[in-house]
Image (cartoon, rainbow, N blue to C red; front, side):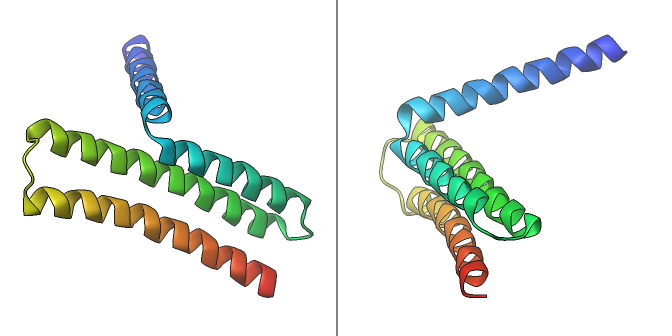
Length: 117
């Protein structure tokens, strides 16, 4: 039983890595968010802020990456179903993109609150 569960875990890790690599190779926005996180996380490390504030900044940056991965998944699934323009396809894609934007706004708000006090 432990071996079977371990094998499932390994497969899920491989599939997750494949998803990350696909998105990294084909979505410039993910690359841009990674670099924004490198800058943001690096800045957070050097600022005189609490450990909790630093953890919040870094965690919100990681959540932006997760939202971008989900956005890409939704876009690809919609494109697979049909290449025709459809109002519902547009809504699905736009709301997924909106989720990335809202996550990024949350990170920005956290930065503002931490910096302004």
